Image (tube, rainbow, N blue to C red):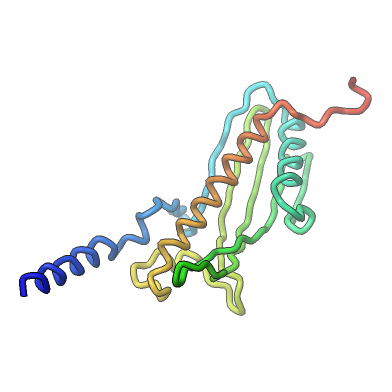
Length: 182
């Protein structure tokens, strides 16, 4: 009888620890104005011109994405603006095997100025007949068989890896050189 009581207490504690966890587990950034999951930042890169940063950004897109032409939605060198849309695969685990659960699309925007750039990843939605914002995974009552915390973790990890790659590339000295300037 004592074991059953301990088991019930253990399950109750586990439920209370995991209940309400989705919104805070990975500290997913949510924009206060839009209510959307948004990864954004402004990075200072001293010694780089707007044109150098723009060229580095274009190079990063071409290196990071398998098919960059399908990602680009807007390129404007004069305004220092690049916008794109991409999607990532999100997996669920069942019986120690991984299966694709969702395709999640997101918008990426880069803006460059003299000595700094701004990045934004936002508008994450599952690709389905009717796209569903991933913000629904933040709800403690998300109907996902307990997988939403893992889905959010995958989005968070991907986004942080993308941002790290972007920052490293834009800070790189490997700027595309003018063929006449050798």
